[in-house]
Amino acid sequence: MSGSQKHTPRRVYLDYAAAAPLQPPVCTAMRPYLEECIGNPNAIHREGQRLRHALTEATEQVARLMQIKPTGVIFTSGGTESNNLAIRGYLQKQRATGTSLAGSTILTTTIEHPATSETLDALVSEYGVQIKYIPLDETGYIDVQQFESLLDPSVILVTVSHINSEVGVIQPTQQLARRLRRFTTTNNISMIPLHVDAAQTPLWYTCLPAALGADLLSLDAGKFGGPVGAGMLLATRADVMPHAILLGGGQQAGVRSGTEPVAQIVGCATAFTWAQAGHEVRAEAVRAVRDAGIKMLQENIPDCYLNGPVGERRVANNINISLPGLDTEYTAIVLDYAGFAVSTKSACSSSDSAASGVVAALTTPERARSTLRITLGPETTESDLQRLTNVLAAHCEKMREIQPLAGPVNGQV
Image 1: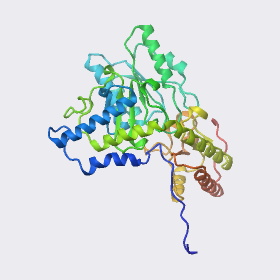
Image 2: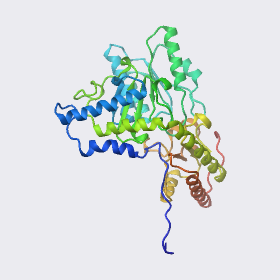
Image 3: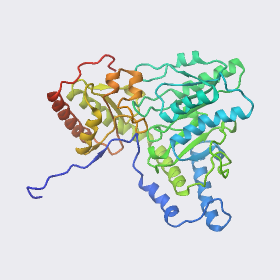
Image 4: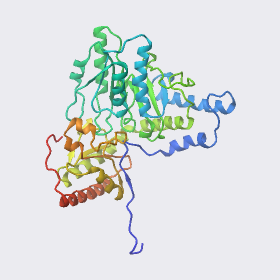
C-alpha cells in the first residue's frame, strides 16, 4: 500500500433490529423460483402445480416447526401486515358473529410497534373499542399483577410485542397467557386471545406459540435473515383465525388474498427454520459481546445512559443508549461515515419527530431526544464495538468543546 492510500476499515452493520442480512441458504432456496419457475401457483397446469407444491412444502415446514396445523400458517408481506391482519381481522371476525364492539376493551402497552399502536388508534374511532394500557416498570417490563387487575368481561383481545424493537425488553407473554386462561376459566367466559408480535424474536429466542403463550403470532422474514417483504401470521386454532382484511381471489383459505409470491414464501420458511435452529447458541455468543460493548460505552463516554432492562430481560443483541444534549441523528451520520450502521429509533417510527416514543414513555424527554440503537448480529465482535466506542467518544468530546452537553438526567436505568 502506498503512502497516499488510506486503509478503509470494514463496515460494521449494527442495525439488525431494522433488517437482518439475507442468509446464503435462503438465497439458494429462493433462486429457482426467481430464475427458473414461471406461472401462477393457483393455475392447474404443470408449471402452476410445481409452484403450488413449493407453497405446500413451505407451509408444512413452518407448521411442523411451530407444532401447529398447516391451516394456521398465513404468509403475508411482513410484520406490519401480520399485525394488522391479526388485530383488525380478529375484530372483524367478532363483528361477523353479531358481537357489538362498542365498549369492548383491548389491552396493550405504550411501547408497541406503530403497526400495532396505529391500528389500535384507528379501531377506536371505527369500532368504538377502548384501549387500556398495561403498566410497565421503568425498563419497559410488564407488571403481570397489574395486568391481571385490568382483566374484566369487556376485554376481547390482548396484543403485546414479545421483544421491543427499540429497548430490547423481553415480555413475559407466557405469564400473561396463564393469567388470561385463569380469568376466563374462573369467570366462565369465552377465551380472550393473546396476539404476540414476535418480529424481533426468531434469531434469539424460541417462537413456539406454546412457549410464548400466543394464540396469534406475527413474524417478519426481514428480521431473521429472510427476504424483506415477507412475513407470517400463525394461528394456533381455527377459532382465532382472523377474517380477511384484503379482498380479492380468496387465496390462503380466504384469509389473505393475492397471488402468493412463491420465492418470498420459500425464503421466509427457509430463513425461519435456520433462525430457530441456532437461536440458543447464537444468543449466548452475542450476549457476551453485547455486555462488553455496554461496559465500553459507559466507561468511556460521560453521561451515557442505558435504556431498557439489564440481564436476561434484555434481548441478546440490543444496546439502546441516551446521550442527553447530543444530536444523535447527526451522530448516526457521523458513525455512518466512520463505517458503522446504527439507528436512533425504530426505522418504522414516524419521521416527524427525532425523539423515540418508546424511550419517552419510559424515561424523560431529554433521553428520548438523544437515543442511539445499536443492534448486533452474529458476526459482531468486541473489536467492532471498541472501534465504535472510540469514534463515538471522540465525537462526543468534540461536541462538548463546541457546546456543553446536558449533565446527569433523572431517571437513569
